[in-house]
Image (cartoon, rainbow, N blue to C red; front, side):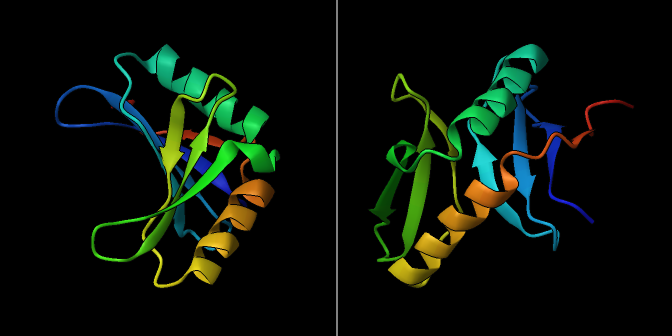
Length: 112
């Protein structure tokens, strides 16, 4: 299975997407969007910004786990990674988003 985006609707009615690596593992979860077109713009933003190292920010959660944010040029957060046990895992996650984020495969799971 190639890398893909899954577009979904939350219980709140807001839209979000997950970027899945070729192995099916989630590597980036988006922010919530009020509309489907806004979420699609978020996917386009990941595709545009994923190759730029300056768009990533590594952080540490309250429980000491590493994660990263992907931000647009305007510094708005586009998505957040899963939690990693180490900084090395976090860096590997960034590399995976850089590789897989350019995918044009979008699975629209918002349709009935």
